[in-house]
Amino acid sequence: MTKNAQLAAWVEQSAALMKPERIHWVDGSEAENSQLVEEMVRAGTLIQLNQTTHPNCYLHRSAPNDVARVEHLTFVCTRDQDAAGSNNHWMAPADAHEKIDALYAGCMRGRTMYVIPYLMGPYDSLYSRAGVEITDSPYVVANMRIMARVGTRALTHIEAGNSFVRGLHSVGDLDPDRRFIMHFPEELLIKSVGSGYGGNALLGKKCHALRIASWQARTEGWLAEHMLILGLEDPTGKTTYVAAAFPSACGKTNLAMLVPPAVFNGWKVWTIGDDIAWLHPGPDGRLWAINPEAGFFGVAPGTSSKTNPNCMGTVGRNTIYTNVAVTADGQPWWEGIDQPQPENLTDWQGRPYDPANGPAAHPNARFTVAAAQCPSYSDQANAPQGVPLSAIIFGGRRSTVAPLVYEALNWEHGVFTGASVASETTAAATGKVGLVRRDPMAMKPFCGYNFADYWAHWASFGERSTNLPKIFHVNWFRKDGAGRFMWPGYGDNMRVLKWIVERCEGRADALKTPIGSVPHFDSLDMGGLDLTRATIDALLAIDPEIWTQEVDEIAKYLDSFGERVPAALMRQVARIKSELANQRAA
Ligand code: GTP
Ligand code: SPV
Ligand code: MN
Image 1 (cartoon, rainbow, N blue to C red):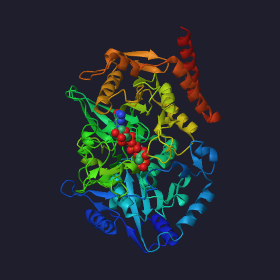
Image 2 (cartoon, helix red, strand yellow; image 1 turned 120 degrees about the horizontal axis):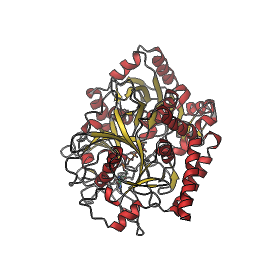
Image 3 (cartoon, protein in one colour; image 1 turned 180 degrees about the horizontal axis):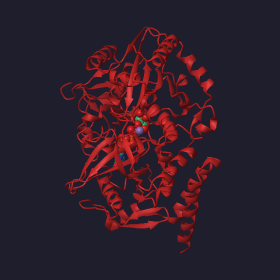
Image 4 (cartoon, helix red, strand yellow; image 1 turned 45 degrees about the vertical axis):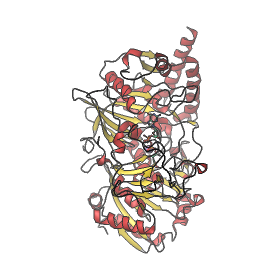
């Protein structure tokens, strides 16, 4: 129970609608978690994994039709439709409430309603925000306990009079026809029904920390972004902080935990966050970043001790796995893991593995684990003021067009660069995989308001400060004619990070082009890497013909947002087009 009257009334009102058998206020304790896990194992919701090799690790198999975010069922419900923008699905608030409340009626009969008070952001940070999620899923409770700071301390924060976001969630009947993820930013309210999966159900994450928070950030003068945060320590001990926005399943977790190649003696990457960053302008005019989350909900397939040793060092204990395969002796397994595919594998749906059924682990199989377990976890990760950013990196998954790295010419061009991000779709959301779509700032599925207003908000920082981070764009995913990745990626991305740090320090060389500055061949540290000059040239090339087409497409996309698009972006379109035309004429 609570002494906060608003919270008490909302819980009571929700219970009257959903009719649970009992209400459980989550305190976040170890004992509470053990009991929940025990109940879930008994119910078959969790499967205990091999406790010798993977202590305190469990497997959850979600419903086969509930394995990813559902963007077509995700709505932003604002009074004014234009406030949500064409980047969001919109429903009038009254209609949305009516529709979803009908699905909530009596949905918790015979079940427990859990009330989860949580804090997004470090304890004692002025930037942290509270929420309360009501759910009928013990799996959600166990995951939220890892991903956010849940329980008594968060409740105390709310009872001290701090505002909180309300999130109502029920798995309902898991029928995709009765599944909705609805956001009411004007009411600081989220309503989700019909899914138990990740971003649809762990409401502190994408629903609160991005969609609702981005709305709040706009009115309050900060930014809520789909970004990892890392610290890059050089051999002298100096650490440079960087945030990077890549679309879902495009490399944030991997970059955040990067282990530099052996030749980068003395360099070290420190992990602060792997998915979400809240950026606030500091008194020094710099942007300071906190990670509102406390855990990682990361993609399992492709993770190995070669690609991401820090991650493998994180997920061996106290981890909830979702939709991975399992070996005969109860160990988690996925495509790309170190161990070759064993005999007698059980696939993510609990069937004996048969290649005819597709991969053994679902391509969007995930692990949930506390960030503090990561060997590269930064000692600044809980700093109340956050870390000061020197660089912001945008990127996408593009087999063509986008070079390995380029640097925006200034803040305004950087905002254009972020707005122009395109990426091939991945298994993190339902729908076709591999289609190129515009994903500005990697926020297409997560921006809680009109993209045009969002870009204007980004652009406005340029008028407020001269001490902003430099902006870069990267692409780890260029492919050759045979469909192979041209860049080794993973730890070797350090080579690009190092150039970025040197650019921030005004050291490394670059060649200015209309779309940005690219490294000179000599200014990228390629020591110990066996790539031909021709491959590196191809990775860094900016083809004026292809980029003229690309800029036309970007302009068309920006134009589709109409009058509200900031003039700054159209200025960049005009500049780049004319410079490319000059280049082609030359
Ligand atoms: P979300 O959690 O969905 O937001 O994803 P993310 O952006 O954190 O992506 P993640 O780091 O989990 O990587 C997604 C997939 O891309 C995994 O299968 C990785 O193995 C793969 N990947 C990550 N970095 C690289 C890279 O540098 N090169 C290549 N080729 N693949 C990569
Ligand atoms: C993403 O899809 O960007 C994720 C996973 O990080 S989810 O929590 O499902 O949004
Ligand atoms: Mn993400």
